[in-house]
View (cartoon, rainbow, N blue to C red):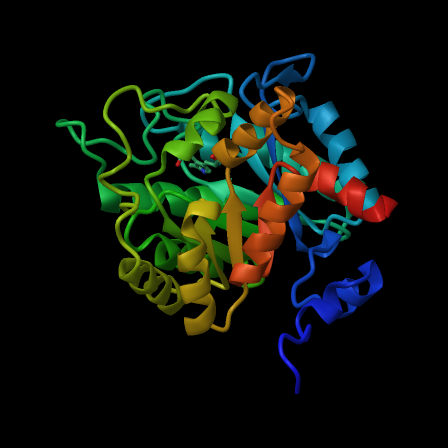
Length: 327
Ligand code: PBG
């Protein structure tokens, strides 16, 4: 062999060669679209901090999901914004709650062609904006909250959801939900556990979209601290022992090491949530002409796949699906 040779560069010469040796691909099948549905509005309302994202009416949500289905996007995850909030988040598990209504309508529209997931949490429904029931001192009562989560999961299953996704980071939430679903005769309803959900500053735009910013304090008492990596393994192992079918890391890009570590430790489907702040940063920089937003979005999502995620929850789902099906 003569040096310098060009062993590595030889395979980068043409687009076809590069496609042939690509180790990771991003496909429409890897995308899940997070969608917001709001009670009591006549027109979809734009979310200012997330250009291109809206709070849907039931009607506009149905149109959006039909469009996603036509593009081949395999899943959506629903977040509800109720007309009224109270300390218990009582509309979260109401049979005619905003997400339950949406699940029923979407199931009618798209049948089983799209996996319908729903976030199972309380922060969108409580007037204080925390993910659980509060004690008198303002702290979140873990065990009392579990009954609420179980009831929300059963209400969503009654409406026909495929997968419930508990995002509140209460200890024991997966076991409580699995038990309640089985007792209510929903053994087929699956659980996507937000196992490694970090207390991140990147959820800001979501809290605008879901109108769920905590009215006092923050979520650091129940979400993971960004300093910790080993703890994510502990969280995921516990969720799986409690009956989770799939696990998730959230946010995605600052936590690629966590995605890679869970990938190498567990063989179940692994999701990553490319969150609102990650979306907003790309959109904001692209609007100023500082980056090529479409290219950056694809690079971000491909990197999340390369780290080991099987699928990605992303507000780019529709745009990227359009781009991938156009090529
Ligand atoms: C809680 C929940 C949040 C997100 C998803 N589920 C907000 C939070 O924990 O404060 C954030 C998602 C995003 O930023 O895109 N129900």
